[in-house]
Image (cartoon, rainbow, N blue to C red; front, top):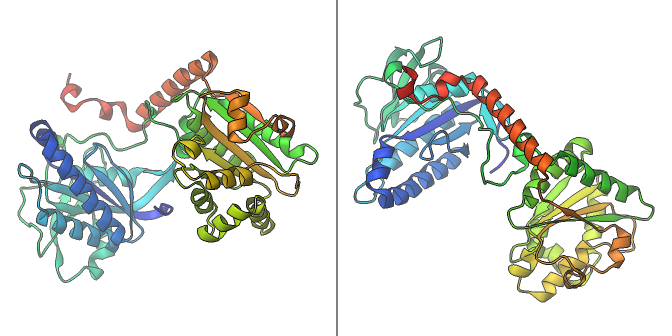
Length: 434
């Protein structure tokens, strides 16, 4: 997915009606139905220049943004027609409610926040399954360009839960779309999940660059790695510098690199960063990460162990940055997935430093701690000579101090999140009166 738009955008929220009952009664059929549902929404949204952000609220909802209101309206119409025409599993018939609203969304950490997002969520809450409702501003922006198949039905002003101002609502209807629905729900009838936001806990999921603000407990280790990278650059004759991050499976190596080291390098140094996982074709993954012609670079690296350094030198000479950080995550895939010994050797030979000091390439490798011994290092092509060149091992286990920081700072973030969302809105609707 390309970079998400910012500024004034049109939001599309979707949600499956009665999905909880369907999941309880027909779990196997719902798994297949949800797969079809997701494919329809995501493909048609992208065909209409939409950006699928992520599930919004429950797992059966979707959140899409558009730079133009008319694209959002056309996408919603196309999606509803496709959903109504879809051949669902035998026990399933999905009805999806949708809402469209245009406004300024505060974009940060790969997500949108603000009043416009909340209003679109509340607008979805008053709709019925199969119904698409549109705010007045979106209607005014899209009314002139609507297709001959589509039309708008004026439903008048309606209050929205938690919103001071009511919304003038329009319903999208037309050929292939249902037009008869009960009256819009009143705010008291709506048991809508809290206005979407970014939860402060990741659970067992890995942390990525967008989660840097939630990544606690590794600040000292991150700063130490950045300092060692800088030290390697400053050392006389050092054109490259290697840091090997080692830890047991699940200890947080990738999270340390992606949510700790990469944001720190970008914020402090402004260096370009390229991340790869070797997979079953390591040279192809390397070329794709650098945004270069794969076949040409692969051929060069297979025949010349200096090819990568020459490519990076040219990139830096164009003003792409003072230095370049190359991150190879899950380095063990070079052996567990890669089967071509010649390609594997070419990858290692190009990655490791040469006597040429003209390149400032920083390579961070994250590997499992299978065996960190001389035999293991030799197997990977790392000899003891690399210790003099700058080879360092960091253990990625979380210290007791770091664990305490995770607990306390996560609780602080959670408290701030609850306050910003409104604690009352986070309580189960059935308990609020109590």
